[in-house]
Image 1 (cartoon, rainbow, N blue to C red):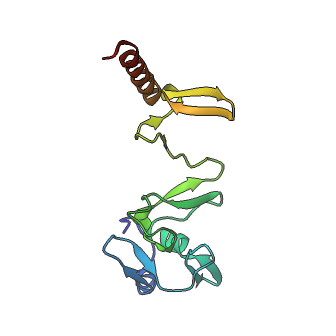
Image 2 (image 1 turned 180 degrees about the horizontal axis):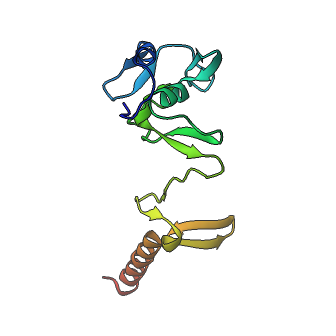
Length: 149
């Protein structure tokens, strides 16, 4: 839980009574959910998303243009049903959520490691490291075929 909470202990206890803590550290909300799986609850006269209520009551109020996103990968967090503020981060409106693009061999594809190739079926984006390696393999196999090595 956040150290700098300004909210009352009874408010926190009321919220914590509605969750089940899982071995993964996720806080599973035991109440109603929307069609996407996010928890819903009536809080201070309004129906609110549970993860926002937990964040605002245990950490800090959210600005109007901000939203919360889960920061843990899918295998480590249960996702939309989790309301543990430690598993979330603030995402400002208008700033895209950046996820690293990775090739099939696990290399991060960024501006310095990206090759665009025009193909018959459109433009293809490839990892420079993998492209160079596949070129080396092709040349090695062609030489072996040509010279019989």
